[in-house]
Image (cartoon, rainbow, N blue to C red):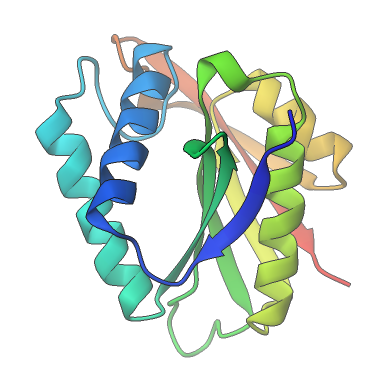
Length: 171
């Protein structure tokens, strides 16, 4: 897929709508990304409007993958941390539409997030995932697995899932 990856400096209401649809698609598909199934459109919109406020304050960076004028993937960097952690960012909500998976978008989004983190002066990235598929991607990209917390969160349709933690020191 020849998607274009870019950072959003602000998030329009149309982009909020598209990102909400992406989030709902991922939750419908079983992704453990902080929301339970069924995820209402209103709750998804509310979440992305909050993210848009964080972007406007430069507390968060949002990258998107666009294909044929639609958003098919996204990843976030949480940039605002306590004063003793100015070098660190958290990678959050790496999401790809189910119909666009296994086409290299996750890898491209993660590489772009690493680049943006470096441009923002960050040298350490951390993330967590409940997805074995995502964990394999992160390991392949050079992320270091540092542990698993059993029963950390609920899957969208119920039932506990383990969460693996990863970090990456940027060059």
